[in-house]
Amino acid sequence: MNLMIFILDLFGTAIFAISGALAAGRKQMDIFGVVVLGCVTALGGGTLRDVILGTSPVFWILDTVYLAVAAIAAIGTFVLVRHWKMPTAVLLYADAVGLAVFTVIGFQKGFSATHVYSIAIVMGVTTGVVGGIIRDVLSGEIPLILRREIYATASLCGAALLAVLTYLQLPSLFTVSAAVLVTLVIRLAALHWNLALPLFRLEEDRKEITRNKPEDPGDA
View 1 (tube, rainbow, N blue to C red):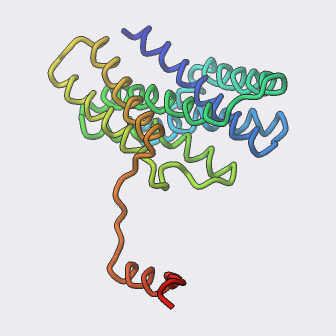
View 2: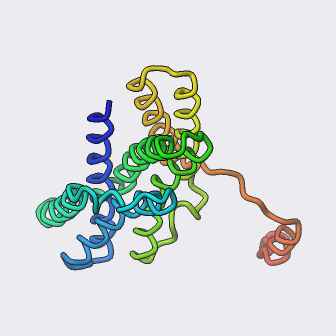
């Protein structure tokens, strides 16, 4: 099981590095910017998680293979897109896969460190979303977590499901697979059907919108 978690961790690192590199490409950054954005996207969430948990040194300093995988994935993406035009949707789908994988990794590491389900859920969400937040901020975009899209909610659902399945002591392979699948399905469904959470709008805002709404020419 530890080998499976390690492989998933490296896979998530590569996927998030690719999403960071693609975001850098959309902003026409040079190779240095591509590598930096790829690495901070891949390593940012796990770094914050380890800092909060008091894990020292953080995971990518303890095992430099994570940094190597992130850099290689970013450089590989830089080379690939110069010869093949990658659809814009690839960034969103790559990010969804990374979100699902990192949510599970974060939960597992948080639970191993604290054995507290609520803390493990928070660590899962933190690991899943923080890298994307850093990527979007550095590339001048509004972070996905602050938009109407279902993003952090998908991570929260996956982490909560993993907590329940872990509490029931079901086989690890099943719990991990189910949590990854649920997070991924919720995020992809939100992308496909443009799903969003309801907005919190004050009555004053509704009146202001009505007041500023252009008059219908037919009413004149």
